[in-house]
Amino acid sequence: MSSLSRGELLILSLEDVVACGGADMVAGAADTRRGFGAFEARRACVPPKCTLQAPGAQPADGLVNALGAFVREDDDAPGLYGVKLFGSMFSNVERGIPRGTGLLVLFDPDTKVPVCLLDAQVISATRTGAVTLLAAGALASPETTEVGLIGAGVNMRTQLVALRHALPALRRARVYSRGDSKRAFADEMSRALELEIAPVDSVAAAVEGMEVVVTCTPITHDPVVRSEWLRPRGLTLFNIGACEFEPELMASMDRVVVDSWPHALHRGLQPPVVAVRRGLLAEERVEDLAPILSGTSPGRTGRDQAIFFSPVGLAFSDVLIAWRIYREALARGVGQPVRLWSSSWP
Image 1 (cartoon, helix red, strand yellow):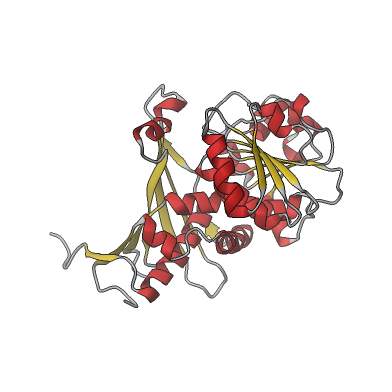
Image 2 (spheres, rainbow, N blue to C red):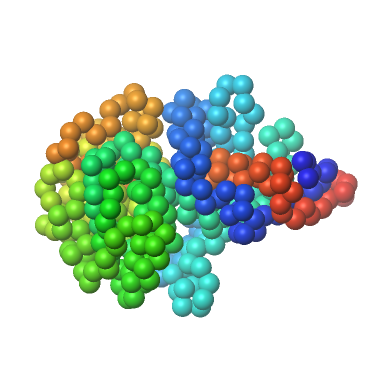
């Protein structure tokens, strides 16, 4: 199956996505790096994320996000189109189904006809880890041997996989989460990544003395990490969720980095945005990641620097990863073609 017939759509399940490289963190990071290059060169269109929630909804009520991107990887390449719809409901775990589920739709560059419908769970987790892999390589000390983790869900698994690739000296981790998920996480990821991972019983125990701390928890407006628990110098903090660190901490950071400041402002939840709005951080001190990845701006310049990184997540990552998977599926004959239409209507 090297191509689809007119009016056909290829459907790829979660298992198909994995079989075609959807969980490959190194490949996902390469896709994401190219996306940041296109984004910096203004060859990408990435509208702000659209969040659908009931009026007056609380975080526990869940949400559905819609986000899309157009990406042209270089001046001679065709532009790639894709849209992701992703639902999140914390109580799903108690029902025995994933907290986050969704779909990605890819559109033919020439005709704008939809050509592929993919399960988005693995792609979303991989792209979240891929950004951390790139940021850690640029912002964290390569001599880091131990990390502190707050959260033990699917996305924290891809965060740790990313750190394993980005930090060659990494040997140990401490992990905290509410309930027993931290113990299952420690057992599973210790074996998978050949790391010593210790579950601990408090946030403070997970982060004290750490050079690198990663937080990835359900959306909350209440910080889970207190500044007093952190070492004052020589650390890199990765805020992957919402407002997981105290906004006051931003004033003591040498550098504050986001993936895109306009997108962070639009979301409005993360510590750099809260700090700027409260007058705790000058807006001009916030840096975007793309110039650091391209070498236009420097990465970490000293072991003693304190650096804060807080990504929103940009849809060009999802789209480029999905297009790589789609091409692999066509080449290998993976997936289920479905005829959507045979003629125009009416």
